[in-house]
Image 1: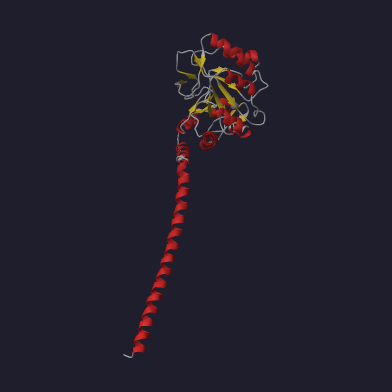
Image 2: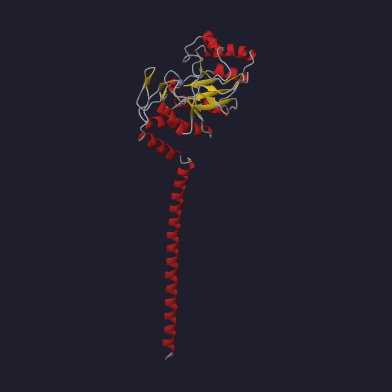
Length: 297
Ligand SMILES: [Zn+2]
């Protein structure tokens, strides 16, 4: 072989090798790009999935509850305030009272009884506050402030303030929910809102108008909440005068749960409460939050 042919072959071999290396590295970088993209895609999928998991499969639970009650044959046999499963008192012989105040929201219910809350705080009287989503939306800062105060237990008073029915029963002229799905929405939309704002999930539910049918009460229980009404009508929807509120509260006995309102500053509620509490204390009563208590019908 002539020497120049030898060199040509060497050069060709080198060129082939170089091309191979170039092509291979290009392939590698391409496959690296593909892998990276797949990884990014997986990451997106994983984070989407994590979002679903984050709301501890609440949605799944809600769907299961709706499915269960859609197909149930259980008849709606009770309607009103004192329905099976609704808790109205604490199970105790101790002289304790759990004051409850509703914040109903809506066109005539968005106000805040600051004097009442100031009194409870200055006298260190624990209470349970039931919030409707409409009130929270109008008074978000106040809501968060009250929720952060360990004096108060904050609980769920519904989303649209509707009587809780699976057939659209009405109370006080307000059309109730129409189905199991409606019931779940009325309870859980506000439940999610409150949990998001406070980091804690309410344990107790009281509907707008405090009316239920027996199926709706069972649905609320399946959602993990307890329905709580009252045994002392404290201010009759904030229509009582101060002396009527005082008189009503003085009917409390061991384990009573009076129902009052914290959204009507022009009512007799605050004054009635301020007059009644020292009298109840002089009779040996103390005040507790609902949570941690054993509740009975
Ligand atoms: Zn209300």
